Image 1 (cartoon, rainbow, N blue to C red):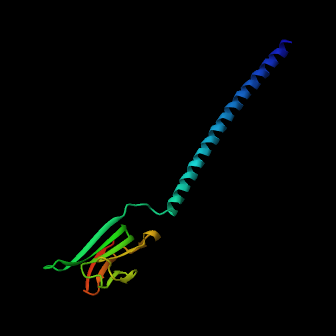
Image 2 (image 1 turned 30 degrees about the vertical axis):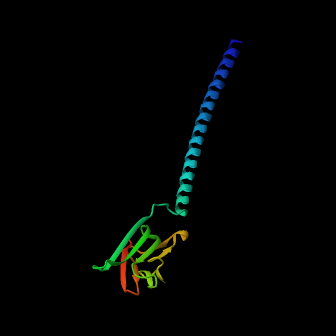
Length: 160
């Protein structure tokens, strides 16, 4: 009988330690699984964020650059160009002349991407590509405005 009680006590101790070990192992598995899930979720979030950034246009504050050419210093007669955009992406461009609105103006770039003719309105000829995301030009390309009636040109270099 003593032997039976000792065997039962040993068996209970063995089961108790196995249960504790099993509980310890289960806790470890849960922690590992949670850690793996968290890591996976973080990786997926980062991948989704990266993919979202690649698809969405960058939101940047546009720069404005202006270049003028004074062709009659005595009267101050001039032509100017103003470019609004960011880096190589041009959102809009305005050519200005102090000539009459009946003059012909031309907005163009030296790489041959843009060539637009028109009559200035209130001395300005403006084109905007902002609603379409802008127009991309090559680094070092010059955007120019020419008052073709006066044959005077002002240019601004586009840089990245």
